[in-house]
Image (cartoon, rainbow over all chains, first blue to last red; front, top):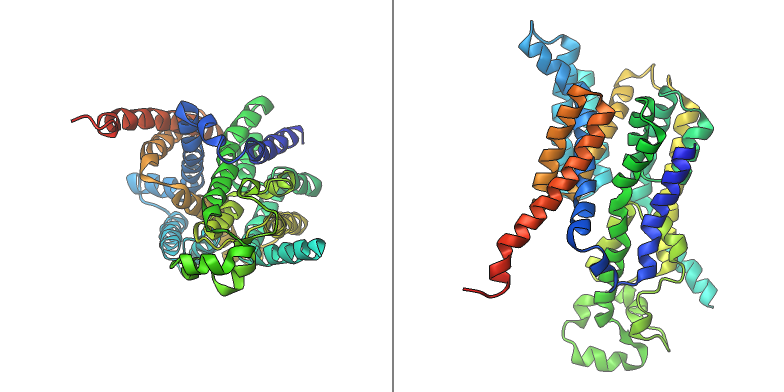
Length: 116
Length: 289
């Protein structure tokens, strides 16, 4: 609860404080290495989270391929994950909408998982 | 009169939040179910959504806290992840400031129409009212930030993207009341969905395994879509290094350590990549032969 409260207050300040600086003055304050770090750390965090969230779907299958062969459950999860990810990317490319792409990817994953 | 106008703009913002809210709701339900599975109580799950209100970092909070990460480390990691939000308000305000050039005083509407051939393209008829400055309003008053303490709370990735899309399209029916409505609709969907998911509990979809499986994949799908939305060519080094560092950290320690290491290594790679880009762009930018 304490962790959540501190992160919540910090996140709110991240969103609010720049509005008190004014539109023109904020540019210089977030320039240079700090600006580059802030501009990259979000992408890096999401990339790391994506890798972490895909790991349970893909790594057991890869290990199975290297060893005796993947189990049907591992193959099912990996195939559904790949198709779900492709559907997410294709939908985002088409609609440029994070929410619609997310829901489509999950739908394709669920349908593939059900059919295989 | 002004109050009624603000209420109408707030209502339009609430209506504009529908796509975001519709998308947030199932993801939030999934978050609530995941929270129950991870052993969080209903008040804890709801509190997290009410206070933090940042989807990706809330899922990261699960990974860190359930993985036994020290609270101080979890706080630093989560704040570092949400640090990108520092850039949202400046980007939005800067976009609004730029289109201020297209806002003409009401008194000279006819003059502006006559002088600007592109005016009709910039202002759809339904948006005319808000494309002109109110009497007494000057360009220096724009964009207004009097109520930013309220609407800035709801400036999430998707809400920011929705607002910026409207600004980038020069559809200037933006106001603080509209922005507040946009944020509130999305916020209610997020908190409501989390609460419903936590109430349904860990075994909510056990009877429908395909739905349970699909909800489980919402998280990687959300991260992939977010990555695609945020990604630009200059982020390539950060993303590649983050994934490689995650794999290393995860193999040597734990997935939560891998996420933290990946995030920081990727951020530093972004700094180095940016510095290299500036150095290589330096001579041409300076006009040297």
